[in-house]
Amino acid sequence: MPGESANRLQDHVVAMACTLEHRGPDDSGFWLDESAGLALGFRRLAIIDLSPNGHQPMQSSSGRWVVVFNGEVYSFAELREELTAKGHRFRGHSDTEVVLEACEQWGVVEAVKRFIGMFAMALWDRRERRLYLVRDRLGIKPLYYAWAGRTLLFGSELKALRAHPAFDAEVDRDALSLFMRHNYVPAPFSIYRSARKLLPGHILCISDGGRIEDSCYWDARQVAIRGQQQILPEDPEGIREQLEQILRDSVKRRMVADVPLGVFLSGGIDSSTVAALMQAQSEGPIRSFSIGVNESGYNEATYAGRIASHLGTNHTELYVTAKETMDVIPRLADLYDEPFADSSQIPMFAVSQLTRRHVTVALSGDGGDELFAGYNRYVWTPVIWRWVSRVPGYFRAPAANILRAVPPEFWEKLAAIVPSKRRPNGVGDKVRKLAETLAKPTPDAVYRQLVSHWLNGEPVLNAVPPQSILDDQSLPSDFPDFVSRMQFLDLVTYLPDDILTKVDRASMGVGLEARVPLLDHRVVEFAWRIPPELKVRDGQGKWILRRVLERYVPPSLFERPKKGFGVPVGAWLRGPLRDWAEDLLDETQIRNAGYLNPAPIRTRWREHLSGQRSWEYHLWDVLMFQAWLRRWAVSS
Image (cartoon, rainbow, N blue to C red; front, side, top):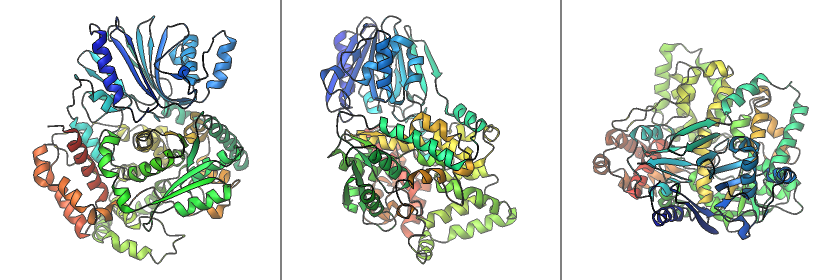
């Protein structure tokens, strides 16, 4: 902000950066342009070029550009070579220097289009006096910004913005209603009315004088539409070969680091593919890590161990008790910084803690479900809808009520007669979803139900849920195939705002960098050209990705029903977490806070405790908001 003294600017930016020490424990720095009222602060997790030449904030060789940069540009080596040929000179070998010189050579927009990577960055053009905020194409790295009076604040987490004395911490009730619906606050909203998330693939340009331009340099919707228009001929072997080569290159690029690296290995298709391609391109055994829990239906560590043994990785496996897992819960409000209620956040943090004891970088298999149709809803929703649509309308509601009336534990016990190798996880929850499906008029309404908890944002008081892309009536014309439509919606909502948020906060919370090779934008663009019949085939999702994996791992080691990466929250709420939950769900406390209507919450709590209904997802949403509210002492 123009007019602020250098000392005040420094004090503010240092205080903001200090809140992010967990993201960058290795180094810190700040840079001031007092005449422009600009201050940049940084905490560094050193990955490439560990010397002082990698220190940030960093200036370009000409002095025109200054950057703070979170993430990695994996195409930096070839860009550096190209820039050197054009006369640019480099002091060290970090990708940050390449970012600066690329902006010097091509300008911000054209440079960013050349980057393969994950990044959130702020670039200051000293000559034109413009600030650019940039986020990667898929939203792997977070970037928040807010106006505090005439001051623009930005950072990787909301806690950095909160550290500024002028930040307005008023809760956005409309955004809170979206959180209650989805278990996360979707972009561009944040839990605060004054703050926003920069959308994936976007650049925010703030000119001297405060003019703001928001532009999109990579549009996932257009990529998906273009991919459908350029569908490859149905040649399974040829497509498998092309996909494997793209994935090998993506994985290889993410193995470049000046620090030890490994891979999260759950034993599922996605992480096993990443681990296999890493091991195939490594001179020695790679490090792999998995977490096991002694809870029936939730433990996949044994599968991961078998995959690791076959690949020959140096595998580390840690079994955690329910108590150790639950000990993470008090930290969640700090880790996730705004309400976030995907309960797999708990094992994700546990595996990140384990991994960080041994390495600084870990590759992850996230993104495979969205790109290659791995979620059960892609396989079963079209099948169920074809069946449901034949059921007379007058019969659907009574049938749904009958299914709802049966406790989920009954369905779990009934499913126990199915051999474990063929038994799906969470049968009770799947029957509940079937019941909800029966009452819906269209397949799109079924999808909205599947991805919603409190459907209309209940029980938030005085809120109007904003319209979102889920309400976009033009989607069926852009995506006539229903499975492709679900994949696209998950790609631009659930993936960045839930999955990638979960991975970023859990990993960076312990100073671990998580890299996601399946979300290289070249993989995404290619995946949209793959015929849908090669994604869902023979009642199985990720068919083509399985064909890649089976070149490295016998199908007998990975072919099994899909299980989520979760913990038995529903049972815990009736048992060891009951007192903790009862405290947060206290009717008087909820009413006095003024954000939620306690009546429906208490009703569902009683039904859950009695076993009458399983409301674990709805209750976890409320519990995570209440815990967040208590931690950050926000008043209504």
